[in-house]
Length: 227
Image 1: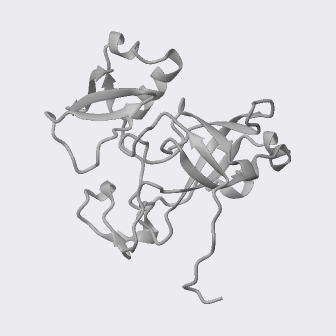
Image 2 (image 1 turned 90 degrees about the vertical axis):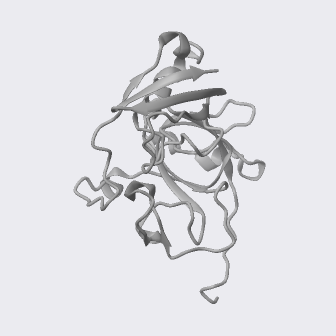
Image 3 (image 1 turned 45 degrees about the horizontal axis):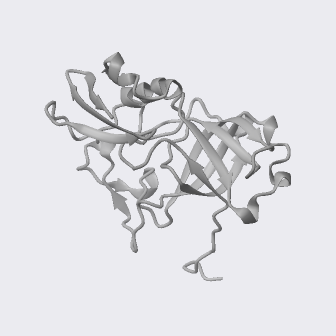
């Protein structure tokens, strides 16, 4: 087989999350309180396929950047983390614009449901995926080989500090109780592109069926509407 030939990939499942669009989705997985539900497509909806999976606490998800498809690719990209102006190699980033639009996320496995009508169903937390993202594969996370606490993070270092989040209680109550802290956790990570810093600009994204609008200034993110 020549290197330029394609290899077919089969979508095995789709994930249901609270994010209806790309804006607002966390830059990386792991934010507490974000729940997702993985439903297998009919050809792979087999209880035997997840036998033993409940023994693991975390999973790797391999998935498709289905909202970032391009017919061509570029060897360099401009990461928002660097202000959107500096170019680096695509393979030095987790940009969605890649030769193959494949994403990788580590999530916590909360439950394996074998009794649901569309069983097996996997409930996970910490997923950084848009609702109905196609899943290519699911693998168990192995701490003895997958965890490298002393690894260098390059320019993709964590944020120095989270934003303060100010959200009036009467607005927060418009969300289901189990979704409120998750939203606050997402907002604290600053959903804005790294190169945007206009304190007067109103940003918004859909979360858990609601439209959340906010401003950011002086280190504080202020929620101005949830409806």
